[in-house]
Length: 169
Image (cartoon, rainbow, N blue to C red; front, side):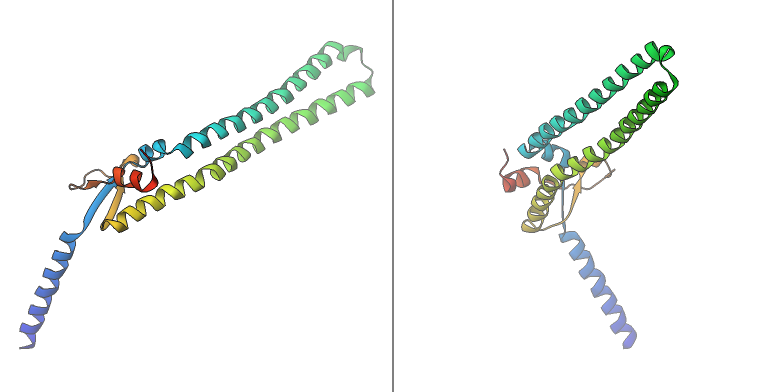
């Protein structure tokens, strides 16, 4: 009797888990296409380009100053007394270090600015996807833009639903 009860219980569990698995909905979205459709991305890209240009201009200005001082040193170095030559060499060395430091810091500043601009946009897209998934009963939503899904059974493309949720055309 106990064996029969166990077998019936196991069979019932298998049937229930199978029916639950079949009822799950799967969806997919190309997050890159979604981001390209968001006007906030265009604004962030534009702001990032302006910021990058300002950093490049400052780097170019410093490099030009270094080049001018180096040319002056190379042209007049032979006629300088030792004290002046040492000062000029120290000046060139300091300027070269400042340029290298600035270039390293500029990369960090650019990355921070990019994070600052894109984090709220990515959060909005993620929230939109999650909201659509919950509202429409999707168990899983796959991002096809990363190419991680090699094969999947038929699933719904939820791009239009997410665009509607975010007010995009």
